[in-house]
Structure formats: structure tokens, C-alpha cells
Image (cartoon, rainbow, N blue to C red):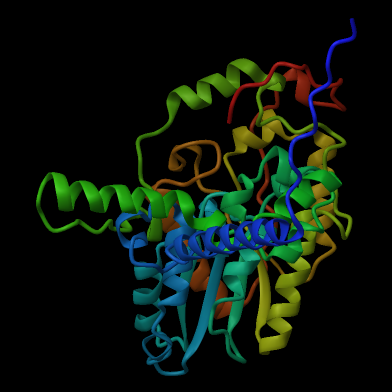
Length: 385
């Protein structure tokens, strides 16, 4: 006996279908409005950021946006040297000491410094664009060999949410080391402020809530501390001992063919943007070549890399070469301690007076055997940077 087939369920009428569609649209609109309302709490200078701002890029963006331009130019001459760049920028120059020395010398310049983690030219360009640059100013950024690795964004640079703080949405399409899928995923991160600032905003909301409702006290605002000045920690002996032990296996080691100076490379494009920015404001662009430890160059930069980077530096007319501080004046492979910072700071004052571009620092540190000639392919194992 065949199994009876039940009748089909009743079908909705045209009026019921229209009502369901209207209901779905209503839910979607309400959800979108709720999301946009929540997203409006996120941004570089929203209320809760003052309780959760913790990243060096965030603090430098805040400083650029809240800068008192009148105070910056109240000195005789009114010209400004803007130094923008990475953590090496942050730790290499003492802004108060620079301005005190320039005032003593009666210079028409004063200095404002903005340095944050992984702030290579491509990443820091967006911050430089926020500055009130005027004709007669000097715009400087630091450069290093590792800035020009072929896949800098993927291998060295910060994650996308940190890049979004200083990189425009359009610039992500020009990252040649990203796949189309990566670029499409990044393009979907809208609103940009929500995705760029959500971690620190959420930290601020949590900190504010704990202070207000748990400890029953006035919420405490975070302070910039070293993030707008410089670090001066203990020498990182374990980090450097690990690099010495691993040698070619270290993530600091650069393969001989790893450099890319093409126009599409992320930081080369960033430097092109710096040049356009300086020209648009009638300012002068200079590149500060601050040397790392000699041992770092000897151990981790193969001869091919040194030669290519040196040739690129020589091809430009806007490079300023800084003197080589002693090895003991660094707290790690690249960042100077207070003693090294004093050497580099004094050179800025001297350069502003003489405009002598200097010469590249010589490396006298003996290179290990693996780094004396063209190196073999890099081993697979790597340490974490």
C-alpha cells in the first residue's frame, strides 16, 4: 500500500509575504542603526579612548590632532623640523633637549617628534599628513634597510588594525604582498574607525566601568608616559644572546635577495607620498639614516643587502647620515639608550646649522663566517621577533 502523501503546507498570501519582507527590512535597519550607534563610540578621540589609549601609534595620532600650532611656532623664525617615523625615531631623539639647544643657539627651528612602533615610511605617512606643515619647514623620516623588504607588511609590519590608524583605506589596495582576498577583506572593514580603534576603546570602556561601578571612584585616565618621549629600559641581553645563537635562523637575518626598491614596495610608495606631501606644503624632505649596532649589521645584513641599501642611499640627495654611537649605547640591536640618544640628538642640532649630509657609518665589527659572502638559502626555523 503506497504511503500517503500529506498535503503541502498552506502557502503565505501576497499580503503576508509583503508583511514579512517589511519586517525583515525593519529588523535590518534597526540592527544597522544599533551597529552605527555603537560604532560611533569608537574613534581616535572619543570619550572612552582617554581611559584605554595604550598603543604608541594611538598616542602619536592624538598628539598630532591636538597640537597647538601657535605654541609650536611662537619662537623667532617660526620654522619647524617635523621628525616622523618608527620606534627608532622615538628613541633616537630627545625633543626637549633638542629644542633647548636650538633656543640657546638662536635657531629659527624647533623640533616636534612623532615615533611609534613599526612606523616605517609607508605606515607613518598618514600621521605626517595630519601635521600643520608650512612653507620653510623640514619634514624628516627615518629609514633603515629592513624597511625595504619585499613583503614588509606581511613579514615585518604591524597587523591591519594597527595600520588602519595611520594608513588610508585606499593605500591598502597598493600592498603588493597581499592577495586580492586580503584586500577585499580589508575593504570590508567599515566603518574604519570602529575596526581601527575598537581594542583600545573596549579597554577604555572596561577600565571606566571597573572604576565607576566596582571601585566606586572617578575613572582614571591613562597617561602617555614614554610613548610620546622615548624608552630607556635595561639592555635586552637575552634578546641579543638569542640572535647571536640563532644567526641565520634568527628573524633579524635578511636574505641576500630580500630587498625591493620598486615603486610598488610599501615603504618606497610611502617615501613617494612623503615627497608629495612636502612639496604640497612647500617644505623640505630629508631622510635620516640612523645606524643600528655594528654587530647587527655584521650578523644579520649579508654583503648583498649592505651593497644594495648603500647604493640606494647614494642615489638620493635627501639623505642625512648620522654618526655611529658605541655598541654600549644601545639597549637592543637598533634602539639607543640615553647615551646614544645624546649623540644623535646633538647631530640634529649640528646638521640644522651646517646642512652637511655626512657619510654612512663604517662597520668594523667582524662578520661571522656565514655572513662574509653571498649566503646560502635561509633555514626554515625562525625565532619570534
